[in-house]
Each structure stands twice: as C-alpha cells, then as structure tokens.
Image 1: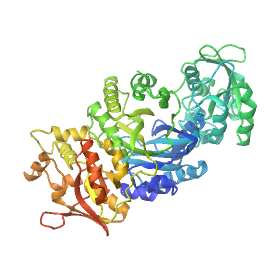
Image 2: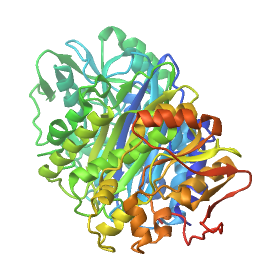
Image 3: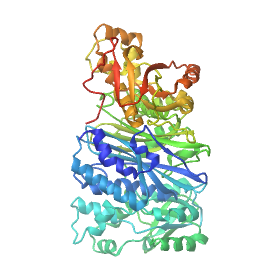
Image 4: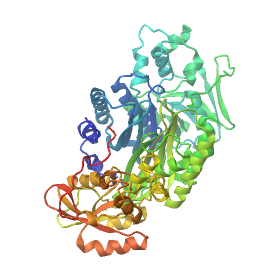
Length: 320
Length: 320
C-alpha cells in the first residue's frame, strides 16, 4: 500500500466529506471563516517515546494526539473546527496500525465535531511523530489569552489534577496499582474541555490548559498577566482515588502538581462571574473548583494546611 | 539553553511583533480574517535524510522548509500570511544551529511578508523534522483547485523544470558538474511563485505546484479535473544549463520530468486569459511558458519531436 493509497483509504474519510478539505486532492484546504468569528490556531506534536510509549496502541496515540490539540482550543475559549495532521512514520507504515489509528480519529471527529482538512505523511529515520495544527473559531475579540488575570480574580479549574501523572508512573512500572484504569484513561483519552469553550470565551479573563504541569502552566499564566497567585493545597481538586494514593504515600504530592497531561483548563475568573460560569459548566457536566486567588506581585505559592508555603524541586516538564 | 529560553531568544522574534502571535505566550494564535477573504491552509513536513541531507546547513533547511509551504499557497492563488512551525530535534539542539536557522527564517519572513504564529519544539529519537502549516488569504470564492481544467485550456508553467533534480544528483555525487550552483540554488532556496498568487487566483482555472515531479503533479491535476493533457517535449521549459546536460547525456530527460522539488506552478488557463496572466507575470519578473493543452479523455502524454509518445518508468516521488 503506497502513500497515495493510504491517504485515499484511511485519511480521506477523516475529512468527513467536508468541502473545505477538497477530498485532500488540492494543495491546501479552503475555509470561509464566519464574519463574526476570529480564527484560533494552535499546534502540538507528539512523539513516540516522549508523549506516548513506543508500541502504544494506535487508537490511544490517535486520541491523545487530537485531544491535546482540542484542549488548546478550550483554553482559548475557541470551538474547534478542523485540523491538519502531519504524520512521520518511523518506517513503512503497517496497514493494520493505520486502520486502527484512523478509526480512532474518526470516532473523535464525530465526538468533537471536527474534521481533518489536510496534512502529509512522510517516513523519517527515527520514531513515530504526529504533528497536528488545529483551527477553531471564537466570537470576534473574545479569544482568551494568558495575560488577563488581575488582583482579586479566582483561579478556577475544570477538573481534578494529577491523574495523568499517576497513569504515567503506572505505565512505566514505577508504581503498581490495584486498578490503574481511571488513571490510564486520562493518559490515553484525556477529556478536552471544548464543551465549555463558549463559557470560557464569555467569562474567563485568562486561561491555560494543564499540559506541562499544574504548577508550570499556572505560573506561565501569572507571568503573562504580571500577577501572583496564592493556592491553598486543600482547594486543589483531586479524585478520591488520587487522594488515597497521596494519603498512602504511593505517590508524592509534588509529582502530581508538577506532572503534566491533565488537560484541564485553569482560568482567571472575576468573582462576580463565578456563578454564571459554574452554572454553564454544570450544564456541560463539568464541575468547576476554585483553587486560589490572583493578587498583585509575582509568583505562584501553594500553601499547605499549616499555612506554610510548599517548595518544589521543578515546576514542570520541558523537552530539553 | 532550555526549551523556553530557546523559544524566547530565537523563535519569538520570528513572530515579527505581530499581535496575532501573542509573543508565543498563549496556547494559540488569533487571526481576524478579512471579510472578503477565504482562509487557505496547507502543511508540509521536511525530514533530514529525505528532503534534505543529514548535516545540511541550517539556513538551507530553513529556506526550504518555509518555501515549499509558500509554494502551496501560490498554487492555490493565495497570498501567505503566517505559519505554525513544529520542530522535532534529533537531540538537544545546538544553539549555533538554531541561531542560523532562525536568522534564515527571519530573512524569508521579510522577503515574503509572513510571520511565525506559533508551533512547538520537541526532541525525537530520530532525525530532524520540520513540519510547517501555512495560512494565506485568497479573495472569497477564488481559491484555485486542481479540478477546474477543461478541454481546450492551456497548460502554463511559471518557470523551468528539472533544475532541482539535477541539483539533487550533484549533491549526492551521482553526477559531477563544472558549476552546480544554479542547480543547488533551486534545491536550497526554491523560489515560490507567491508574487503571482493574485494573478493565479484571477486567471487560473486549476493549478498545482511541482513538488513530487512534473509528470506526477500535472497527472494529479488531470485526474482531479477529469481530463487529459498533451504536452510537446519541445515546449517544456528547461534552462540553457539544463538543456546542455540533456544534450550531453549527463542527465536523462526522464529523470528531470519525474524529479520533484522545482516548486514552479503548473496551471490550466483558458486561451482567452493567456495574455492577461502573461502580462501580470511579466510585471513580477516571471516568464510563463505554454507547455501543452488539456483535452477530453484521461492521462498525460508527452510527445517527442517525432510525434511519438514518451514512456516513463515512474511518474514521481512517493514516500513509500
């Protein structure tokens, strides 16, 4: 099966018949952006051995590759529309692998109402790489940046922290769990909060998604906004399963707060807007948590139950 | 130099201070697409060992990576605006390499009036990979597809064919040339025909850029349009230097017609529009050639000086 056959058989269906993609037959896709919308664009590359294990199931790779990009749209308050996918295979791709990969993408296309608008496939000398560039629309002037947080705003989270970090430890065999499934689910199929995008565009003053790590990403938001944030440890949301692992000393709190890949959204919300966004989140089945408060100054502080500031060795993930 | 420092020092300047890119501080870039324009999106990945030699100069890698994408914009009649760049380094990147690479991109940003709107950097286990997704604007409804060629249209080319194929042979040491420089220039710094984009949008009924090979790409255009094309060998434009190499038996004609990477645009133009597009091209310093004529039927035929059809072993490049 050569490159053209592969595209025709497995990637063309991912365009979902949308005219914009032209059946992947043209040099480019063409979009008519609605007049009342801004275009939001983001990219994320996943590579084998870094973002997923070598030999990971193709469906897990597909779900993660698309969803981390969808998460960036949520953080901007944008509703995703389409994506370009650039695949670099480590060798002549295995057809069964490509089939399972494309079926998983198709599933997510339907779930999140997006389509593949183009891309390319190459064979590299190294490991499998998937680079996705995603597009979304946000009402004109309402894209949510990182730089809008102000003194008095609340730090609001769309869900619990640390499950992906536990999942990775389990995948790597560093810890053994009776039931790793709720943690692995977050690693393989994170839940991007795109259903909340319209509410984020309406109510959040600044936002970021938790990809590099809770501490690192919220710190970036503070830096961009030129303000500080105080977070009370007791207000950081963990699932019961995660809390039990901390309690039992199976995982260290620091690793959960600095681990990445949660793909929840952290926002700055004015206190007056909290009720409105909480109600809209509830309508999407999302429970928001208030984890801290922004203030003048700089830096992020996590205050333990004794009121003392916690110290961290590193704030999050970097590639080098 | 870690990832964040690298982005700040070498990639942030590539945003050219454009507000859309938000200083690369946000999860995504935000564009306000003009109301009278459609958005055109395309991607191309280059990897070391396939699209350029291992150890190639960083400035050559940068020019080629951006320009092959600009060329896709030209083929759609779109004026490029910005690009997302996803870099996968084979190892911790060398700062001098990144500096030279980013300076070359900066040069092309200015030359082609584009900016980098975002992207990411990762470290893979394999070879260097550069995946660019480019955006451009075209007047609403005027994007040029591959499927518009009709019986009687002329096959028009924006420049000579085969120089890149000669350059690659020279780079690989397959042939030895007294002066390889005009051929290497096309390999390292192809000239995307974006200056002609507005004229292409106005006058071309179908277009494709010559990336996989003249025969392969024009065949794709025929297939998409559901028509055939007859090309007379004597009408295919070669530079004097290339013609001399064919004449002297240094390179085989077939290799030039099926070699890729010329990045000229092949168009279907109605005979009535030829004068107008020729004049607009001349104003941009581009000399157009009429190399053939589309007709009903299917397939591409190249007719030799004796009127006999030439036969080719393969039509162009595929990755696998």
